[in-house]
Picture 1 (cartoon, rainbow, N blue to C red):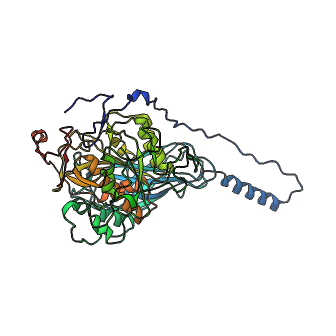
Picture 2: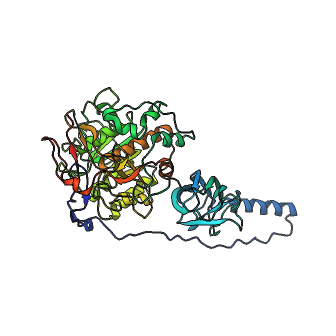
Length: 539
């Protein structure tokens, strides 16, 4: 395994061992987290009433004053809560939810507690599963949260409720604290099944089950496999969702990469364009700060040229949204739109700041999903805040785990502990690829998808098969696009929870031994840059 340092720590497929143009220190700043909020203390006193004021007027005035006081308080509630419908005693599960302030005043800091209970009411015989700290929340605003909790191994099998309680310690002056609790049913079994695995995370994604759960239905009926070069779509059960009419329509997926060949015969009709921009007139028509960004923006060169020369971004795009036209490749979400955002140069190198700026651009210009088939070996505050920003705006960031065969993902995929999704690679037999970084013991939302010998588009109306977590990631981005085409209101936390609950069935053994990595034989047209990456030319 090559030795990495902070100046050479971005990875990608097809030999894209991405080296930042600057070191991490150029873009990192101290972690400044403003978690403290203040709430003014106050004391309300009644004015002494004149003797001639009637008793009824005094009562009316007091009543109105009480209502006015109530109207200015905060009011915290839990909404959009998700929990697995079935879990084994002793297992660790992921729950997600939103806390909303329905009141007219900003709340101070507070806690949300999680319990498991036999009924919908919190009582002394309930078990505390955990808690989460929340900072100040403005009037009318909400925040999405997720949490990993462990079910007591001694809990008897049966039907229970996961209880979410906002403002658990009554820190906030609220209009009412009778609406703080929300319940979700869960069945506890004594048989371990599914759940999180430090190798394969939550396992192989299942579009049929995920999309069905997103709209409250049972998994869709199986349909015949497409076969051939579309084996990846078969493996993630995308055709089952297509048969139900969910094909990614109305969803924009931003591909932050080496660019996109938006003239490709299998992509051109599925390319996002900035409808508020007049192409080629030299003006910033929509006032977003970017001149002529009709086909997105190039944050590596600081210009509007997003055409792909390298080929990597085009390959990723075909897996997501290749047109269903009977030739080439059919994308997982073949009616979605690809937003080209170039954050890497033509050799596949890039900086953390360019990637972060690309995320902000994608979010602010209408992307619903962001595909990051790239990454690095070290955390970066600028990049992390960009991923957090996307999540706060309901945009799902899908991130490649990395190709070092390591025990945990690289960055930004490791941010999937709290935001977005990390993706590992499996082969056609559902075996975890030897090069794929594993999920790790520190539980995060890690799923797997086809990433070995994946056939897709290349610039100039060409096609080829590549391998890497870079190729697995767009499969997951495509499935998320299918979910959002079925239910556009899903939050980042809800998508994470649904995929954690519906994924599975991935074997954890390596596809090839370590020795085979450097001895694989390819045809003469193959360009193998790194022994950790496979690149095939499909004849």
